[in-house]
Image (cartoon, rainbow, N blue to C red):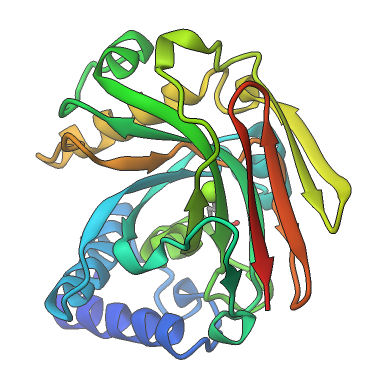
Length: 262
Ligand code: 0L1
Ligand code: MG
């Protein structure tokens, strides 16, 4: 680790407050260019501890930057992982208040709900599918705390990978009853297709992202617990939204979900 404990705490407080007050900030590596990966995840862990101390519950995880479209959009080469707090969850069909956010974008995703705990190292797609209870459509609302979405990967990890809000719904399916590689999705904004793709855009198979998450957590002595909800990563590039926008995600064989922005 390159940063002192008090610096990690200070940066976690800063990023947590930026989220809560919908305030942007320059990326933190501008001031701490030597920050390493352990520092980045330690800042994210400290943000998580701050939320837990305020009474929030952690209900799952997310994988980010898992599609080639997203990696290209962000100019990076590997996925990142974050956590989902209970208050990030938005009821299906409801409205997200844009005034509570900085510059939201939406991503079409496949969500996994686990029936058994999953612990790396060595997890693969088959292990993930065997441990999955069901899969369902999810829209992630990302909202980087960094000004103009300008960041590097370590800053993004520290900022809990831009996690902000999400909705899941539609028709949940057992993992064996759907081919998650070929499943097609259409993301509509205000009734017009804004992005489309297939599950394989996420690392060849969305379950790969869950296996990578389990292996990542395993290295840190953690596991994906039974019952966790996991967003496996955007299938397409992220789409910017503004007040008044209406977003609908249609997933082949899994129904649709909608989200409004007010
Ligand atoms: O969920 C994601 O893919 C987002 C990862 C963080 C980068 C971003 O804010 O776009
Ligand atoms: Mg995402």
